[in-house]
Each structure stands twice: as C-alpha cells, then as structure tokens.
Length: 293
Image 1 (tube, rainbow, N blue to C red):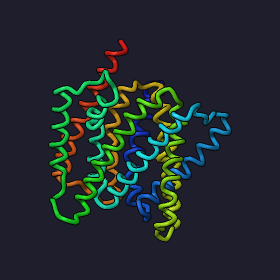
Image 2: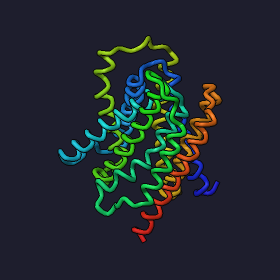
Image 3: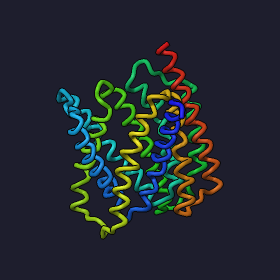
Image 4: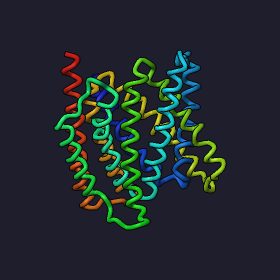
C-alpha cells in the first residue's frame, strides 16, 4: 500500500473511531460523569507508562503553562460530560449533529483571541446556514423533554469543544500535544473523581468494565495514534475536512447497533449543518494555506 493511501486509511479509521465513541454513552450503564472518568483513568494510566518507557518528559516548564492546561482540562471536563449526557438522554444522531456546530462556534471565538482573525459577512452567513440546520433538527418543544435537553447539551458540547480548540491553539502550541492531552485527561479525572465518590455509581457490571476498557484503549488511545500517524502523510487541510465525516460514522453505527434510526427531519437538518461545517473548514484551510505561501 502506498504511503499516502495508508495515511488516508489511518485517518479514516481514526475518524470512524471518534464518531463511534458516542455509542458508549448508550452501552455503558453508568452516569455520564462516571463514563468520562473511567475513560480518562485508563487512558492516563496507559499514557503514563508509555511516557516512562520512552523517557518522554512531562515538564511544562513554567507555572503559566500548568495554569493554561488546568483551564483546558476544566473546559474539556464540561464538554465531555455534556456530550455523553446528551447521548444518554436523547439520541446519537441529535448529539452528534448538534456537536457538529463546533467549527461554526470556532469562527466566532477566534476573532476574540487572535488579532489577525476577523469576523466577516461570510462567517455570519455560514453560521446562519448552520443554525437553520440546527433549527430543523431541534425536537418538538415540550417542558421536561429529554430530547430537547439532549439537543441543548449537544449545542453546548459543540461550544465548549470549540473553546478548547481555540485556547489550545493560542496557549499551548509550543508544547508537546500528546503531553498536553495527558494533563488535560488527568485534570478531567481529578475533577470527576469527587463526583463519582459522593454521587455514587450504578451497580458495575462486567460489560461496563469491558466497554470502559475498550473505550479507553481502542476508541481513545488507538484512535489518537491513528490520527497523529495518518497526519504524517495527509495534509492538515484534508484531515480537517475528513473530520466532518465523524457524525456520519456514528449515526450509521447507532442505526445498526442500537436501532436508532434518524428521522427525516434530523437527516435534512444534519445535511445542512454538515455542509456548513465542511465549507467553514475548507475556507479556514484556504486562509491558512494563503498565510503560509
């Protein structure tokens, strides 16, 4: 297999795993905060031993970097809990499609943190198109509706992930990305551990343990490895566009494994959201390429 084809395959595998990870919100019979805590516990443990074996330094050099990573970890905690709770109380399709608004939120956040990024009429237009898609997807308004609550939490998950992405770009670009990921996940675990202790868990079954281990290894560490390795032979621009396939993989698997077939309304709204996200990503990549040339 040619190097470029192998790299493209690795990126596709990573994105399929990213999208499929949403299913664990349904498969694991635990509160969302416990699912996230279990995921990062095993992931952090494995990463720690890998770093020790390869003599990778965990030093962030100064106090400011540790504070920046602390902030990122706290926001990531909120993001993950919102996302997996959204999956639990609504559907995989609603959660993934609302989360797909992330690139749109990023276009509004970036001008707040980067002087060279300006909010243009085109940005606003793309956002309006995306939110038309969101309006199509939104469940029927009913007080106490879990579908509506899941929809709102999915939107907030997209917003918080966009914030994490923008802050990572601003604050920690000079640091090792894998080390930053280790600290972020460690902070997520530390933040959620007291909630797990004081709130309590559901009775832990063998299937819960199996799925959490699978989630931590294959769908967290392996997916990250495939993505980083694949990027060596695929441009960041191409990878960015491919990530918009993430909800498609997740929705297909949810339909096959969980019998969660998206409604026609969700499919139409999803297409509108994804088209806006693809266009937004491609536009950002063209701007990035123009700056580098």
